[in-house]
Image 1 (cartoon, rainbow, N blue to C red):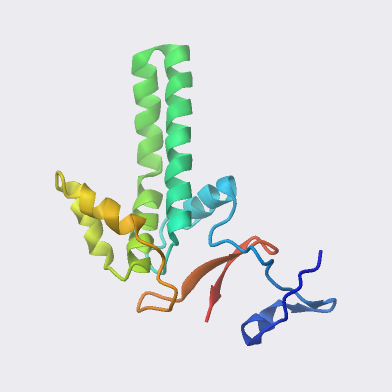
Image 2: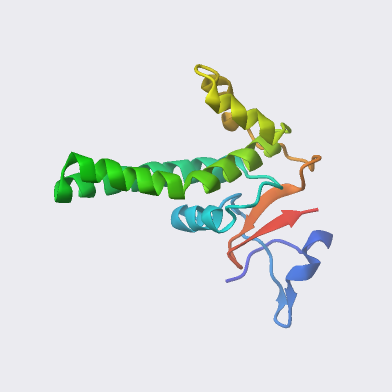
Amino acid sequence: MEYNMPPNEDDKERVTPQGPRMLPPDWRSAPPFWDNFVGVLKRYTEFKGRASRKEYWLFQLMYFIIMWAVSFVGEMIGGEMMGETVRLIIGLAILLPSIGVLVRRLHDTERSGWWALLGLIPLANIVLLIFTVLPTKPYDNTYGPVPTYDEMTKEHRYRY
């Protein structure tokens, strides 16, 4: 598949023997639904860098869907106690990746990851919610380059 985009200086690593590999005109900042969720889980100890708004919210949506489905199935199989137990186990397993993507999302809005501690204060979650809804800064900041996603290689690339 070819795209009508000329290569630029930032795409030197995309040159292959068949010619330059360019991003499609509609490149996205986060991979498709499931790939995004798995990608965040793989980077569970990564608290440096940035996460786009789309990456963060797709992860949160998939997390909600998985928790709802697992809770529903657990309650159908073993009752309410089973559903609660399974939800607790999965919640603990996904806690560290959730914190990691939240910290990277705060970095993308040019805030320190320490702002995530607002989640421990009642009603301060509203401020944290506002921070995570803010758009991605379109320029490099002190936490790293702008996060992008290359649909061709299915990897996160960073525009320098």
